[in-house]
Image (cartoon, rainbow, N blue to C red; front, top):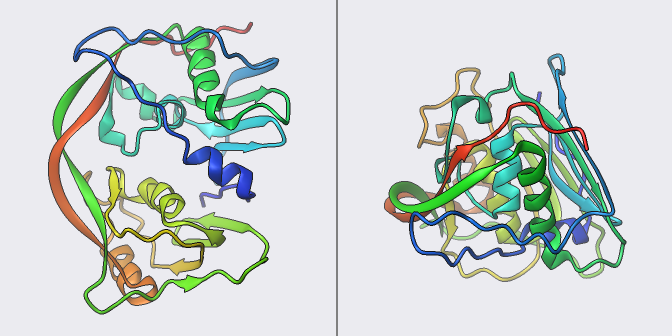
Length: 257
């Protein structure tokens, strides 16, 4: 069973921060080495099943990844939305190569630079060399279902809560952007929000998790049905150009310092 940590509003905002890579296509990605954590640890781990997963929880000045692949860490650091936006050796996605990462900074450090700090840390420890290019890739457009929206508005002053497991997403006081972030873990390809919904919502979504993974580029039919029936949302499969980060070099064992 996969589990995610509960994330307060601060974490949700951090997950929606934007990093723009404005470089000519094919150019080497130059990492801004100005921001850095006060202290950080990155280590390879070998958990036994079932194990929990934390994919970029930022709270009280601490960024945490638990049992994450290098691809998942880079998706957070580069603000990428789908697995097909990172290309590299097979091991970067393998559960045989998992990592714990913790970075600490001041609780008042601007959240807008947390992703850059994570990118610097990953670049140093894994000795990364990256470039990017445009590729035609499949993606989902999140739309309001034809039967109408069923998302429940969050009550004013309510508390935040998030519990995410295989086949279940419970998230209080969340926005659609963060819901998209969570859903992408199960679709494996980018989701583009085209709903124009800007409010805060209480989300409870449950579906039958399949034992066999769906083919890459498709979501579980039970997830698609649950979105329609429980939240009044739909995933429309499309294809278009998107920025893809290419990993030219990465060390499998992170440096200890």
